[in-house]
Image (cartoon, rainbow, N blue to C red):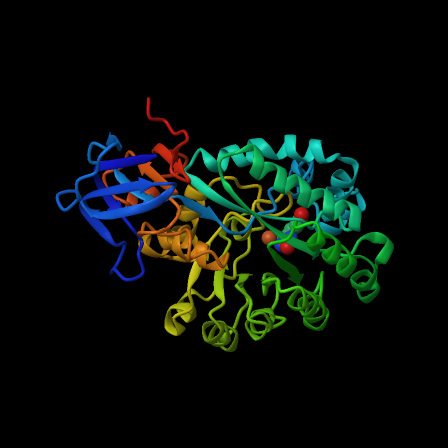
Length: 406
Ligand code: DI6
Ligand code: FE
């Protein structure tokens, strides 16, 4: 199976090239699901037996990567949103049965099939905008059985759609009511046994935690990360979202793939992350939705050379967002990222944040052929528009899989 994409403008995002790695008159040869050639259309070696696709001068980028989502969940929190709009406080909402515990209740009540059915429309919304890889976390089950159910649902989604799906175990997301004030016991009784069981079933690609005053401390997270290390699993962390507990520094110290949110991260945190090669995953959807005013220290990340990715954080409580294009616009408008930083953030750097840069995230020879073809005149349009989807065609693993190419 050979496909030859001709007459295209390429933003390869290759790290070896400056800027977006642009090739003005480009071609890509896909052979056995991989990129076999990328370069000038004119310099293309002769290929026999390939299906030729004339791209009519359209732009091609790597397929987009959403490297931080809680895509699998049940129900929604629109009612709670209305209460917040009417001025209700977090406590009042919690007393009315809202907040994260309500999502936990709904996930516990749902079957694996329910979870899959409720999540597919969200996955389809992401994919419709050229997303070819999605990370999905557990963390709304908070019993061993319910965490396993979420991860099985996530794996099942990957089997039902043409997309790379990676799973992250987030047992340390919140403390359920029956363990209130007993985080240590919860980690011992549920988080660690759940991790081992999920790992045994092959359900875990990485391990995450919510390091925050309202969730788990640095010392508690270390216990979870030590267990992940024993199993040979990479770690990442929700860090410094609402306060500076020095979660970014902990993530760096544990060699984490990424530290995510980071609104309250300081100079030491940024420096440590850079040193450790830990990617800063910025989540402007959550910042926007909870009306946070403290921005992540983008200038510090630039100064230290910390790599920055962007993701939706799709979750029912703080970021009911299923658009990576809108996420890029928010990254630029709210966090002052450049177009190049936004595009790298949902391709190359998102791949790095998943530990997958060797196989996805750029258009380079040998990588999996995950691509997005766009009806745009310049790459900046992908960041500039709000609520418009210019996807022409999506290519996953070498296969043409949708888009508005009629
Ligand atoms: N960060 C968040 O913002 C949430 N979880 C997390 O790790 C919110 C989860 C929720 O409210 O459902
Ligand atoms: Fe999150």
